[in-house]
Length: 111
Image (cartoon, rainbow, N blue to C red; front, side, top):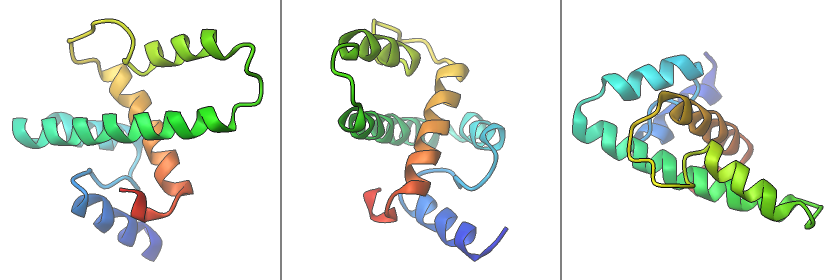
């Protein structure tokens, strides 16, 4: 763990996220084991950042012809399509991967 990871983790904790410099499995385990209120707050924050990351990736998308089909598949993969009210670890893992990559590539003022 280097200085950048420590600063990144502190900013994540200040924003209400788990330390995002860890492995995906560790992050998901921290979320699952957190108290109910904290878990809910972290999941909501991750869901919000997932939506922001997906919107930014859509702006970078080049082919508008496949956009409608891809949007539906992407929304389903990240748990935004349909009426799924059940907690899914797979969807949480996908969201964590996307958010982690998004935050590492962006300014940390985003969150």
